[in-house]
Every structure is written in C-alpha cells, then in structure tokens.
Image (cartoon, rainbow, N blue to C red):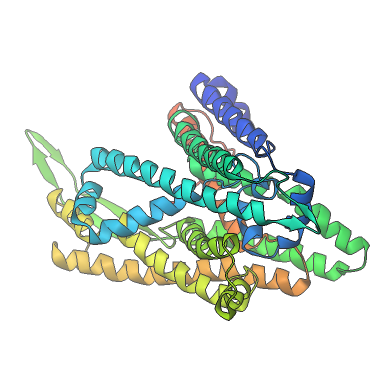
Length: 438
C-alpha cells in the first residue's frame, strides 16, 4: 500500500493516470448511447437470447455495447482484424516486410496503413449491421421502426465513426496515459460485464438452475486459472551470456556474465484475440446476410463459442498465431548478430549461425509450452462453464486478457515509481512486478 500512496507524489504519473481514467470513462459513457433509429427495448429482447453465440463473444469484448447497439457497438475489433491482416501480409509482401525492419519510421507507416484498413473494415461491418437491423423483428414489431436507405447510411457512418473514435482513444492513451490503450479498452469492456454476469449467476442459483457446488467449482476454477496465468506470464528461461574482458583506452573492463531471458509466452494475449476475431468475422456476416442452406445452418451451430467445433478450431488457431507472432517479434538471427557484434557469446555455443540455431531451438520448445498453456487457459474454462449451465460467456480468454493487461499496466506504474527512487507499486523492495513481452 505504501507504493500506491507514492503515486500522487509524481506529477507526471498522476497526470497520466487521470488522463487514462478520463478517456476510459468517456469510452464507457459512449457505450450507453444507442444508434439513432433503433428501438432499444425490442433490440434487447432479441439479443438476450444470443448470449451463447458469436454475438455474446462480441458483446463481451465491447463491454455490452453491441447488445445495446451503441455508437461504439463494433468495438475495437475491426482495428484488431486490420492489424492481423497487416501482420500476415508482412510475411508475403516484401515492401511490408522491409517496413517492419525499419524501426520507428517503418512502424509509423504500418500503423498508418492499419488505420486506413480499419476505416474500410469498420464501414463494411457497419453496413452489414445496419442491413441486419432492418430485417430484425420481435414478434410483429420491427427493431427499426423506420427502415430505409437513410437509416442504413446513418448507421454505417455512426458505427464506423465509433470504431475510429476508439482507435484514436487507444492511441492517445498509449501516448499520453498509462498502459497499452487498445488493450485497456478491451480490458474495461470485459470488466464492465462482470457485475451483470455475477447477477445472472446468482439468479440461476436462487431459482435452483445452478447448484451451490457448481458455483463453488466456478470460483475455484477462476482462482486456479488466474494463479496459472500469473505464474506462466512471469515464467522465463534464462540463457547464460558471457562478455569477455576488454580494454577501452587505458581502462580495463572485466568480463560480465549476464543472461538472455526467453519468456514462455512471448506472444502475450495476441493469439487468443487474433483467433477469436477471425472466427467471429465470417459468422457475423452470415448472421447479417442469412442464406437458406444446410451448410450455413451447420456453420452457425459449429461456430458457437461453446461448441466443440469452435473449441477445436479456436485451439488450432491459437497454436498457429502463437508461433506466428513469436516469429514476428523475436528473430534469433538478429539476437545472435547483436551478441556477436558486442562480443557476447553463449558458453559452449559457437557465435554466429550456431548461436542463432541454439536460440531458435530453445525458443521453439518454449513456444510449444506457451501454445499449450494458452489453449488450456482459453478453452477448458469455457467448456466447464458450458457444462455447468451458465448462460454468459466469460471464460479463460477473458481472464487471460484481464490478468495480462492488469500485469502490464501495473508494471508500467512500477517502472515510473522506481525511476524516481520511490518504493515499487507492489510494496517493499524485492516484490517487483515482472512485465510480459507482447
């Protein structure tokens, strides 16, 4: 608690925290502003039955904004989808691959392309949502009392502008606030659903639809999952690195023995977010533009977040994105070259390509463990929740994002405190928060 009390003593950190809280408050207020022309009551009646579908997953990530059909109903998912596409294209398009290697200048250019693609994707999804709303009826009452071209155009611009506003907010929080803005937006969207989820669970218990032991099992499961996430996100393999003695001018510098940390989960929360985003994308469009076909009927049931087909595809995509994103953010050849350039070496391993191969082998094994960990965390709790008969979607993916983002944000606050010789955010010396590599 002493570390928390030191926050107000640093004007810059205090301003950053207040700015972050202000921007997130604006974000949550926008989630309660409904799109013009929509009957909110009829919409809530229709979507209340969609909690176990892909719409329930989308509603979880948007903090209930989608079920309210607010002006930010699409959330930040179009931006994440655009980031996925640019990352994938960077592997096959030499120009984008070159930009990724150009440092800050290249990243700024890629970010600009991501923004442009986000505008296109959000506009396309907004058109689908607006057309879908005009076809939605509750009994004989339409959700949109006055459908037409004007409503479709207005809704398209409103929802697309909402996503662009969130993208701008996220970048502004990252620049002027604390933590990663996009991650914090998703974090607060998920956390906002917790009170409603708890209330619905208590209702099921009071009505006898859920036993006391089922609730106890859910609590124990969440505690174990959170403990497992904290342990695995802080776990790493340390590779010994030796720097020989050297002479600079008249000064003699002794050899230094240090280590190269390789985290088990180098990719962080990116693989589950990427996988869930891609899996929700096709089914969302099939819901917006229904087609009478046995295949589409099967697709709707197979891609429900609580079905075994969805769990299987979700697990495969998590494994793929774990290896893919790790390969993008960590290049063993570059690490080996940097060690050789500065005179460092791994004891017992020859410098150069042999060092790169050694690091690559170790990283592959760690990534395999990390991929299995992500699959277990993201899938098993959801299947258990489904078996227990709970109607809301709050599984391992949500817990992974919440715990991971909380750890990253706490680590940034810790860094600000320690940089100014204050006691750490978590208390006495020695109890330092280890961040995650995203």
